[in-house]
Length: 342
Ligand code: MRU
Image 1 (cartoon, helix red, strand yellow):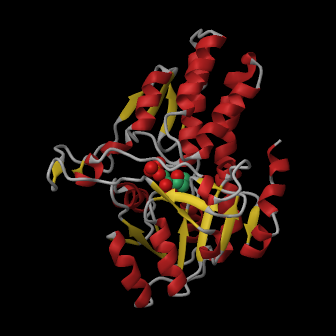
Image 2 (spheres, rainbow, N blue to C red; image 1 turned 90 degrees about the vertical axis):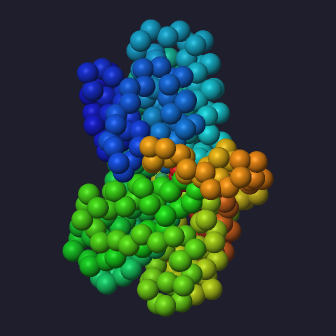
Image 3 (cartoon, protein in one colour; image 1 turned 180 degrees about the horizontal axis):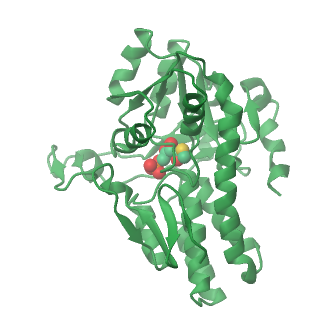
């Protein structure tokens, strides 16, 4: 395998490695994923996470499997298992299906193409989104949408980073993002590394900040966009959208075209992952000793994502290939993008 290094995935000395994101921000621990089974486990446990990144990670894991001499039958079997490792982010299925669609001797080359392409798609989103942020803006974001969620600089975070790099004085309010705290643990880590001013808040504080006039815009990512513009993203996104709508704050979704599900007409068709009750009953990541605050048998509902209707995307959709508003989405502009994919 050819060497490369991104923020949270790399090939070094012929080994495919990921940063174990469950240990961040306390420890930067690289894990070797020498077999697709290890990658499947890492994806399920969110050691590697974020819609575009799990697609890239799955593709590279299959490439490494092929390079190590796997048969075509075994490759197809592991490809099918990888596709099932998480259900909501369509980028995972998109990347694996892409490998399945090429001849076996082109799997490795195609996986590296997906990696390079993801980096380029991030640049595209940043370019098309940066002018939406003005000097002096305070921006609310949810979950983690940066280099820990993509192979490049990110989706929503790419726009924020570009605005900061272009000299605009901005401030980022980071939702901690219960239950697994991707905002509190990961987005803060990334913004801190880049010296971008931020304030961490509990998810439940966002509405009050909006009413106080402290937030001018919302930027966040997506795990799957339906053709009518409805989209799935980390649980809590819908609440942010409703609150932003009430306070007339522009709400933007930022995603690469690999996040559009061209077979999905609306948000009702998006499968939503349900996760372990223990994630809600206490803290299971980012700490050395798990802490439980509810009774062990407390009844729990733990959907990892929610669906936000397109009408609440009052700012628009920032994609790698351009900006789209609600009218354009209603007229079917996402459907037309399918041609760009081929
Ligand atoms: O469960 P996660 O941490 O994989 O969820 C990630 C998100 O919801 C992100 O907002 C999403 O992938 C879009 S940004 C790359």
